[in-house]
Image (cartoon, rainbow, N blue to C red; front, side):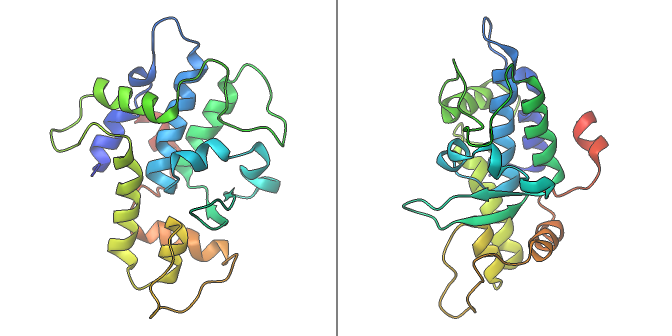
Length: 198
C-alpha cells in the first residue's frame, strides 16, 4: 500500500515527464494518479470521465457513470483532486467540451502504463510494489479501515455493502460523503498550499 509520504514522492511532476512528449500529458497522468489514490477511481472510470462529470454546476464532486462492474455514484472532489485535475485542464492545449472525455488525449499512453512508469522512476520506499493498482487499493483500504460499518464507505469505493448494513440512497448527501472522507484522514486536507508546496 502507498503511505502518504510515498504518494507525495510519486506525484512530483518530474516522475511523469518523458523526453519528447508534450508537458500536458505529464499533468494528465499525475491527475489520474491523484484520482485513484484520493478518490478511489478505477482507471476505466477515469478514462470514462466526461467534462460534464467533473464538478458539475461548480459543485465539489464528480460523477462516475455506471458500468458492467460498478453502479453510478457521485463522490466528493477533495482539495487534492481539484488541485490535480484543474492543473491538468489548465495545461491542455484545447478546451474540453462538456460531452468530451476528460482524459482522452492525443498521444497519451494508457494511464496504467504511464503511472507504472512514474512509480518506477520515483524514489518510493521498498514496501511499494511497482504496480498502479496499489494507488486505488490504498484508498479502499483506508476508507474501509476507518468505516467498515458504514454503507457510505462501500458507496465511495463502488462496492456493494454487506447485507447486515442498511441500504444507501442512489445519491447520498454529498456533505455526508465529504465528512466521511475528511474524518478518514486519507489526504482530505482543505489547505491548497499543501498541494502547491508538496
